[in-house]
Amino acid sequence: MSAGAGVRHIPLRRCVACGQQYPQRDLVRIVRGPDGSVLVDQGRRKLPGRGAYLCRSRECWNQALKKSRLSYALRGDISPNDKGRLQEFAESQLSGV
Ligand SMILES: [Zn+2]
View 1: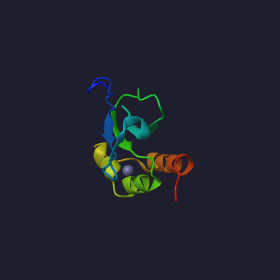
View 2: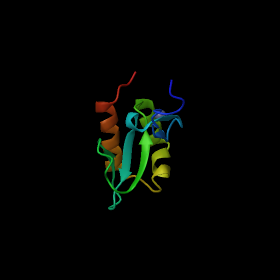
View 3: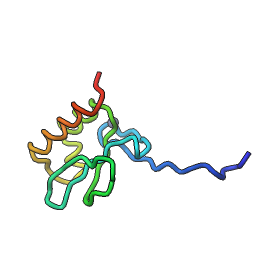
């Protein structure tokens, strides 16, 4: 019966595609590195640079890549190469319907 004590704060982040908030660990962080390339931060969340989050819905990834939501969130264009890699990640790692 602890009132408030022991309630752990879970950091929430917003998916840039659907706008929903999720616990940070349920999202995939995407980072623009110092050289301008965009990549998936796989797990460590230590990569420097500007980050954006996407939830694990493949639909969101498609939206983010097609509608430039990701490039907007990352403040700049994403090269076709990097886009291709993100698409690949989505197709191999995320469950689609
Ligand atoms: Zn989403």
